[in-house]
Image 1 (spheres, rainbow, N blue to C red):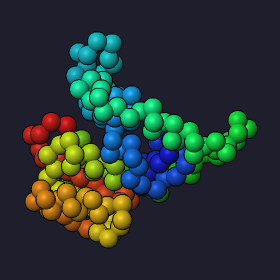
Image 2: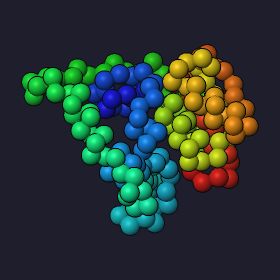
Image 3: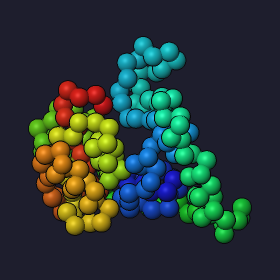
Image 4: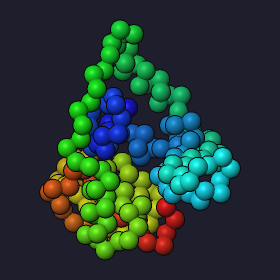
Length: 179
């Protein structure tokens, strides 16, 4: 994993919240696979209740698929690392991701914590694919979040700066809009 600000991966290049291309491009650089974090009905074939992750193939994006060149570029960046290279375990995060989301939801008066999307990548996807209701930033001047400020201004979405936010950004999806 390249960046793991939530601290769920054993190995990650960084725990920093970064805007990575695949976060914004999603399915078009991931083999047209789109994943999401949802609580799906247990009636899904083969699903164990509750299903917290779901995925689908975005066939409508087939002509825009950049997976092969994106992976080739990542491969080029890793050529200096041999098979003997090992990545040490990443340190644990300084925060509990679920608690952060629950606190943000409570602060915003939101009953469904799934509407809170923490990290600059998730916040970017909210603005690109969902109906945003609020943007929270750790630092309004951070270069990795300037695009979010522009999106919020264009959409008329309120922005709050929360210096204690353990992510660069978090976005609230409008209640009632699809997750």
